[in-house]
Image (cartoon, rainbow, N blue to C red; front, top):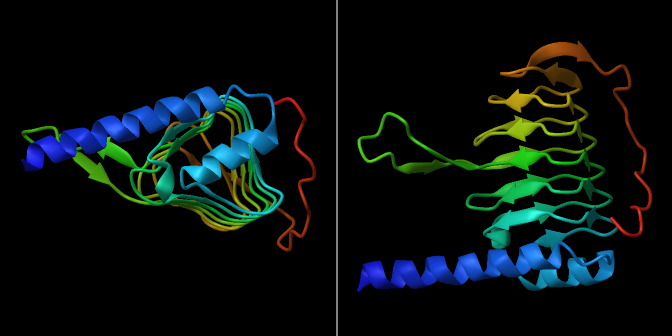
Length: 183
């Protein structure tokens, strides 16, 4: 009986993911935001998710205020996925908080939360892996694979991501502004 209930739950959430993927093609931030919130994504004031976003288990995803998530982002909510305020996520960034344990005989899944703090910028096609916190003001370069925490105001890049610099502005207070209308 337990196995049957798990299977029903899995099918239900797969259908939700399918509906959210279809929603991601609608060229209206207002409609998308309404549907995403309906299915449990907590989205702060002034924040937007551009077209083509892919969701897994939306109820564990929280997005702060004035945050922009770029086109074709992958948002994994199998564990907590938390974005702070004024976060700028470029196109095609993937956030994963579940992965397989390659040393487990059954290749079982392991999960850990991902936290993106305030004023972070994540460049195109970066990948953020389970258990990572990207601290305030940090920058992740395009194409980086982040496997461990990024300290405040550090700039990281590469595979795996390593420190390549540091932001000079240690007191950011900007607003990202309006998202493009049809993205």
